[in-house]
Image 1: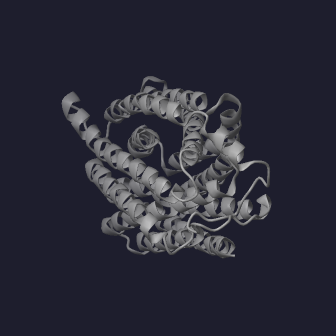
Image 2: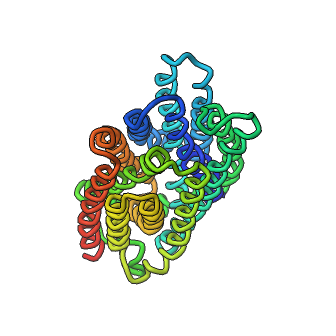
Image 3: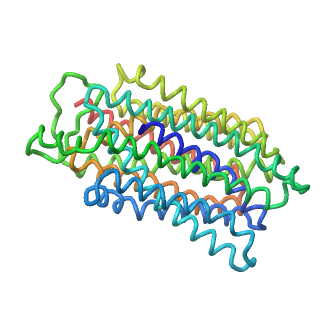
Length: 411
């Protein structure tokens, strides 16, 4: 049920909504700077709400917090399509407000899903469980991207309009509300299954140090103890750098293909779906690869793949280069994310998992927001190739920080 909730939520938001929203903003008459600003607004709102989501998870309980998150993020997705009904001067403030509402709800859902997955697993099967969750989420995004890419053309033909008109995109975005509403069903069922497991596991472990820097790949070994601050700071910095690299691709690749090369929305959706499919395959493969590698090494491998993919996007100034690079970036995230999530949950005692998950998500979203804001201005001043090159630089930092985590996990 938790994996299914990840699939529905990710498919509606990260698959369909994020694909269409950038193209929708362009049809409303805005440029790359606005696309980047809205992406940064969402990511920074996500960051600001991360610790709130962790605290609410402790205070209200997992299921109540998750249900509240689903309601809020569904309302946020429903706000964007209404911008076409507003006066032009009101559209940007409305879109910004929608991004904030959506991001606050999404962080409450995501943080609790990650923590609930930890409650439903143990040290030995946690890595494969997070790989499975990533696979479900990737398949959801694959379907969302494919449907999202086809919808504007279909709606435009039914209305007798063109795909340069914002109305087909607005109506297509309205479909994401259905996906958000359906997410409530597995959230409720999954919440019942994991209710009370966190407190039971915490009681079983007894008092002790708040953070254990053990790695899930080290099965059968007693967890080594580290202080919270150094390793968590490295983890947060790695999440920041990796998501900055990811944002360079996810925020601007579709806009680049649409505005510079005139690639049809249906093709952009198909390519994005292929990337999500590769993510799912990589996530399924990650548990096998992780048998002889610790989480830090898996994160290094994912970061190196991201460097290569973003350099391809920057150096090959053609649609094929952008498409291949996009698939590559999305694919290697299937290796990086499960390792990152498994490592952060192995660091925390059960009662602190929501807070650690929130802090780690905050680091990731800050990186995404920083690249979204800066990248929009870089694209306007120097072109999209410069944005992809900046993303490759961020990925190099991610590899270095992954190496530091690999050494700590092995020590």
